[in-house]
Image (cartoon, rainbow, N blue to C red):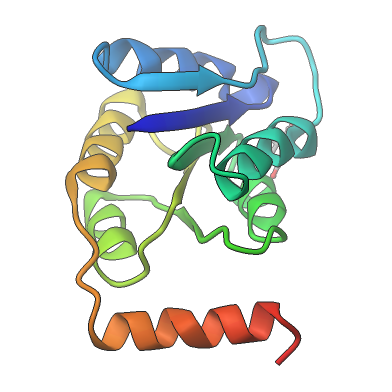
Length: 145
Ligand code: RB5
C-alpha cells in the first residue's frame, strides 16, 4: 500500500520516526524535509491531493497539534482525515470511518504511542454495512447536499 506522508516543521521528527518504524511500507514523502519553519497547508495539501487523485491509497499528516493538518486535509473531497490521540481512536477511525488519512500531533503524542497508533490504523479494516451508509451521507454533503 502506497502511503503519502507529510508534515510541517513541528512534525518533521515524528514523520522521520514513523518512516523508520515501518521499513517495509511504501511511503511517498511530500516534506517537510527539515525543521526549518514551513506552512502545514503546503505539505498536507500535497498529500491530500495525492490520495484524492489515486497517487497514494492513504496518507499520514503531522503537525504540532494535528489540528491544522486535520482542518486542511478535510477540506478535500474524498478525504476522511482522523486526528488520532490513542490506539482506540485509530482503530475506530478505520472500522467506522474508513479514514484514508491519519493525522498525528507531534507536540501531543509521543513517538512510541504514535507508532502504535499508526500500526493499528494501517492494519485495521473498514467494517462497511451501516457505516458505509453514513460515509455516503458525508459524500452527499461534499457534493453540496
Ligand atoms: C506550528 O507552530 C503549529 O502551529 C502547527 O504545527 C500546528 O500545530 C497547527 O495546527
